[in-house]
Picture (cartoon, one colour):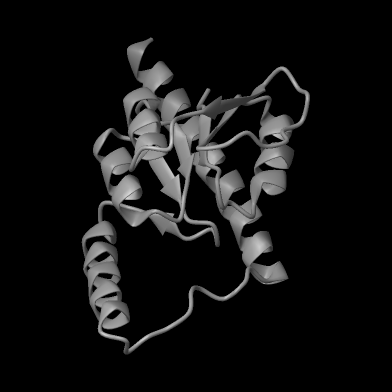
Length: 158
């Protein structure tokens, strides 16, 4: 079964991850730069990494495996995890894929340049109820897809 890794410092969908992970009996590791409250459940772990630049990202990339799931808003982290065969979801439920990561990185870089030039201010809008709903649906779909892939793989080896 897949393991779910959450880039947890600013993740607003942790409760949704817990709910879906409990339904499928999956392990969840939250990776953060500081301690935070997590449910006292055997399948949920908190990994506190140092404050170094990209420390949480590096830890996730080092531990993620093919067919694991990563939840993050960090586009470069998503790219690195995709290269290891993981499935990656944004905080709004948008899947990062091999087909869309290149354009997503380019858009991120363009927006970063516009922000540094003072053309754009402010961050992303707050998560809405429909974003949370879409995230829940997509996380469920990703888990089902991984299960189907593993079942097909097991059938082909019989």
